[in-house]
Image (cartoon, rainbow, N blue to C red):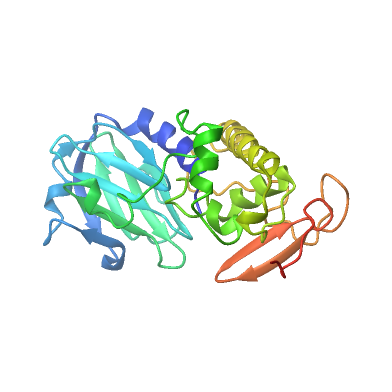
Length: 272
């Protein structure tokens, strides 16, 4: 699942490549992915240059000079390829935007969960208007973070991945942030001390910032490749913890895994 660090680097790369290029053709090869909020054929998505590439939470935005927006929500397993239009690439895309710069931006999805929206307004995209502040927004200070957190109940990992709380954190980076903070993923929010909330906030910043820097070096033009090898615990179940050497635990539920170290992140599923 592409999250804030991945999409931040992808948007930076595409901004350099596609801004100013006209979308000359829209090819919908598997209609299940497209949500045309204009209705009818997606002609509003062609014939106009891309004016920017932006990220909001886990959405990638391509506004056009015409006023239309292409909005990509990759969800669990969607990804983009950017390649020369005449280049043969593996796989069958769901949707292709053929650009005037001789390149194509194509959307793929391994599990048919992601969506690509063509819309006249961003607030029409499901979930977009409800997004909370960006996890790395300078305006999200520790007091603001703690204040928002106090309104949420339940397990801390679930809160971190709630896009209405903060935007951009998904399953993988929630695991990394909680490992950094030494917090059990299933701790109830009400059990966190002010010192633990402060540590959680600091780790949110340090983990996401470091991941962006790492991905800038690792990803390059290969925006279709998921880079997770540098993560400390997520997806590393059965491997030694990089901090204490104990075996990393991994639990699977609802199509996602939770990876954590029971020694560095002590806790129990039974909580008051």
